[in-house]
Image (cartoon, rainbow, N blue to C red; front, side, top):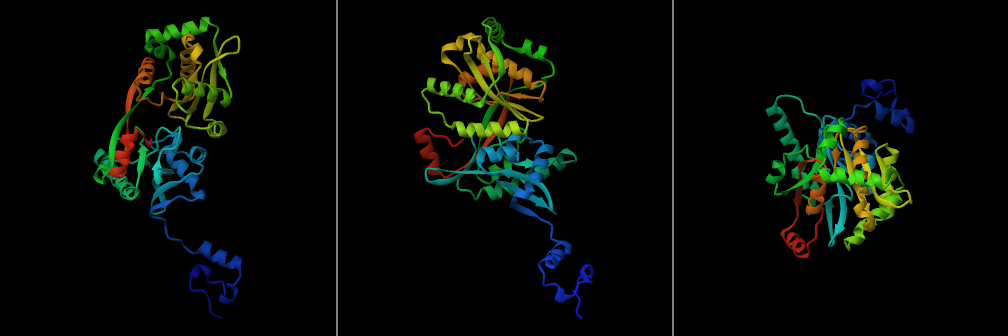
Length: 356
C-alpha cells in the first residue's frame, strides 16, 4: 500500500487521508513557511502586536489594540515580519474626506507612527537598522493617496519618509517627568497657579471621580463658549471611556463645590510610561474659581502614583500652550508626517481645514 512521502506522516495511508480530521492533522504536522515582509495582522495576531508595543521605545496606549478598536471601530495594524517574528508595525485608520479615502489620525489619539521592537547594539547598528525598517514602511505608505499621522516623540528619525516624498511638521506637547516628587512639582508651578489652587480650596471646591457624561458636558460648554461644534459624540466618548476603564487605564474626574456645581471636569488616560490629559472643559461662569487648575493639580498627583510622565497632550494653540507651560512642564517635539496631492494641499489651505 502506498504511504505518504513525508516521514513524519509515514504511518498514514493515502486512502485514510480522506477525512477532515486527518487533513487537519497533516496541516498541523507539515512545516509551514515562516511569515516575512509586510502584511496586515489578523485578529489572532493582535496579542503579539500588543506585546511588541509594550516593549517598544515607542510604547503608547494609543497603539494598543483595545484603544484602536474603541477609537477606530477596528484595529488595523500593518505589521513587518522577519522569519516569523513580528519586529515592527504601524496602526492605520481610514476615513473619507472630500470624497477621498484618507489614512489619518483617529479622534483623541495623540500619536501613532511606526512601532519597532528594541534594537540592540552600538549606535551605528541601531540607527542603520531603524532606518532600514522605517524605509520599508515609507515605501508602502507612499502608495496611499493621502497619509497624515503624528509619530511618537521617541521616533525622531523621519528621513526615510522624506526620501519617499512625505512632508514633516514639528508639533509640540508639554510634559512633566520625575513625578515621584510632588513637592518639586509644586515648587515648579507658576505663582499664579499656586494662587489659583488655594483660591479653589477656599471656595470649598473638591476633586472627585465622575461620570463620562459629566466630562462630556463640561467639554461641550467649552466648545459652546468658543462658538464651535463638538467634533465627537457622547456615544463615541463613552466608548473610549469604557475601553480605558476595562483596561485599568482611564478615569474621569471633576472639580465640584459644596452646592454640587461642576467647575471643571476631565478624562485622563495612562499606561506604565505616560499619562495623558485627554479631554477637559470648565463652566464659563465659574472660570475664576480656580477649579480647573485644582483639577489639573489633582490629576498630576494621581499620575504620580500610576505612571512616569504627565503629558498635557498638546497644544499648538497659544492660549492653551501658555496655560500648560505655567505648570512647570517642558516642551517636547514630535513629528507630523504627511503626504497628499498638491491640489488637496491648496484646497485645505484655502478652506483652513486640517486632516489631523
